[in-house]
Length: 403
Image 1 (tube, helix red, strand yellow):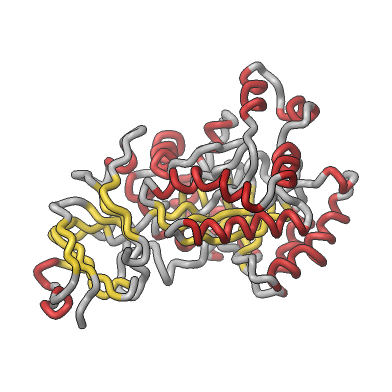
Image 2 (image 1 turned 180 degrees about the vertical axis):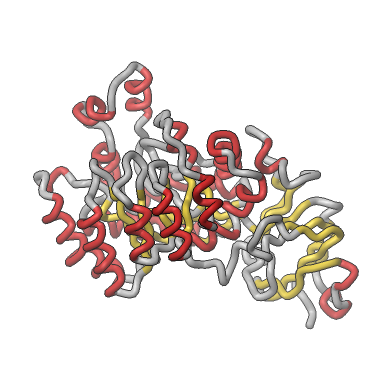
């Protein structure tokens, strides 16, 4: 069988074996047909019929990894919250910022005032920054609309990004993100609106790949989130959770109970929560950008995750309030320096485990025959450079579905 394209003369980090190590292959080759990988292995073993007529790219000893995956972002938003950043630098508390019209409510007001076209226009530069670092898949959450019309607008804008750019977009409905101003403080009534009106409509319209919630004292209780997750399960939609970021409400255990794709943040997760995630196959997603930006001191329990065998991913958490970061390479460095994750964990965390956190690991995240040919080709000598550098982007070529 002939291939469309062959990448040869490369060193490969396949990430395929699922355990420690990167699955390295020296003097390797990847062959692509119809956007899918049809061969990955030693260049010397590449069948000659695959090479015949194929477009050949000689990588000259560069490294090929799977394309990077940012598995937790709030990329679609309007405006910014730099004024809040200034206020916090001057000593203002979160509550004081909120009283001055800041916080998530400020982003809700800005998104509601923006058109779908304007949301796409404002988001594209953030998406382009991720793409420029070899990102081939991006998860995008809603959650700044907080009513049906504006949640729909946010998710439709996210879908359009995948048309404007050659990138895969996963859309997550985060209606249970915060309480909108018009709710009058009634969280239970708002959750009813999410469960009975918003979620069914958006799923019916094909706009939802997963459902998320923010389980925290300043957001929603475990019981309220469980209502959302029960509704999602009834509709056949997988769930994710913002869990145990600021306190331990046993969000990790809640996520595990619903076999969530991922539980994210987890700074205050306990040992039992780590074990529950491992048993459920739920990925723990590390978000060091938010930890850094809000100057947290409680680190996620990485060692408990290791002991339990919990899979770990890394993401930017790009959002206007607590992690205005559009560099997955920087997120890897932060996960290493702040959380003490090692190089193999960091690279797996933005490829194989990030794919698992989105439920797409059968299609992408590793270099294996049958998967999408989503590749990142790096001008580096050692994979550790991807985690080590600050501000240097060593990407040489990015390949999305063979292109």
